[in-house]
Image (cartoon, rainbow, N blue to C red):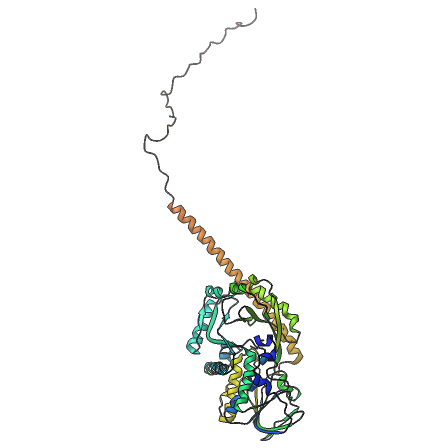
Length: 498
């Protein structure tokens, strides 16, 4: 996934190695080479470096400058895998082919690690955590078994309590921890990669856009504003900005602008919210963040299929941070920035040979740094060694992304997915709260039952020891009563007046 980097936030070229800056040049003379790479991003520079190391003469043509777009604006998380979920990948190409592709993605991640050790100040931190917005305990176990046993990937399953101990929020549930994943400063890395390619013998020409390409014949022809170039192989390693000569290829990519920001220093309150030092991403692909510069957050979240000024979306990032970590309050944004990525319709990168001598390495949006390194190695080795493993990507053909309609649909789908994720998360948290309330009720009921069971029984007093009671008199046995005198009825006339 392409995301903005720390260095990009603090002044793009200030972080680039000095050697790379000194060697910038336009192509102003005709040139003959074995391989011409169009695009000086991560994939193109890896092709150039590897091909030059294997003995080929290589020229890289870049219309602007090294790493100006997505390759220079990334969060820098490096881990195995692809943008397409593993289950979908298996369903599409079968278990064995999926297993081989996954192994290639692991090799790509290790390539980045090895190259980063040669670039000063590039490596940053270890470990990546993928968290779930919903409770997926049962599915987590099966996924861990598949990754560890079938795909030879070192992973750990984190229960809810452990996730929330590192990320103090109720928004996340279970997590998958990749201890072999790591983070680099992406901006430094892409410029360092250009430096390594030059050291291997590749020639990089910036501010040299391609005007036209003739890919017929054994020797291909490339025309630039000030020179002509001939090559046996052309590698199209651009993104959505390949330009008019390659418009048909560009139209197979859905352009997506991903926005991110770096906060102002947060001090001790950041440590009270987040203690995990690696990168964090959610399974729905909405938020991606990590701690940078000790007490700041780099956070990538909103995306659109049309460009906008990054500062306009800074408030959206503020709201996302406040939603996930309300204890941080409204954080101040120090810088906001964006990078345009190209997403394929099928969700996998475009790697392979379009026709004899014409190669493509593109569509790395949402794929990760590891896939750019993997593609560079595959294509360089295929051209020079005859390595045929790029054919594993043959099922993922070039598919038109739909043009303007595709962008509208893509934006609508993205909004729907965010809304669906939010609704699923809210429902999961409600159910969790309901279960917690039920446990509390059951605990109180059990406590009440225990108290009732341990209360001493009411004792009866022994005979003659109880309080005096008033006896109930029996007939003829009661106390003597005073008789009421009876009088005879008066005689007739008695009592009448005389």
